[in-house]
Amino acid sequence: MAKITRISTPQAQIVDVIEQILDLAKKGEIKNITLAAEHSTNGEVLTGYANADVNERQYLMSHIQSDITMAIVAANIEEV
Image 1 (cartoon, rainbow, N blue to C red):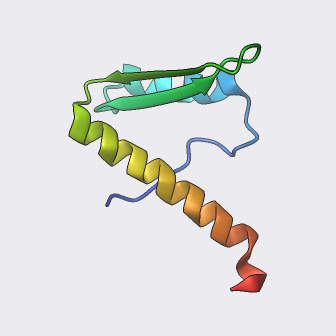
Image 2 (image 1 turned 90 degrees about the horizontal axis):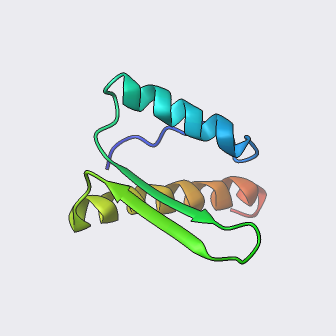
């Protein structure tokens, strides 16, 4: 698995995160992307992918899950 690098903190503004990704994409530094977003009024989850087949989608999602797991461990480090 590759190193996980957060683009911004979880509390960052949505537009800031998208702009950072867009800047990287414009520089040709993004190979593929997976996206999930919750609609603010109806709770619908929107998903999208670019240049990612099913294996690459799973690969990207596993990194998101790893990031979540690390955040859970960090929040409970005193218990470990």
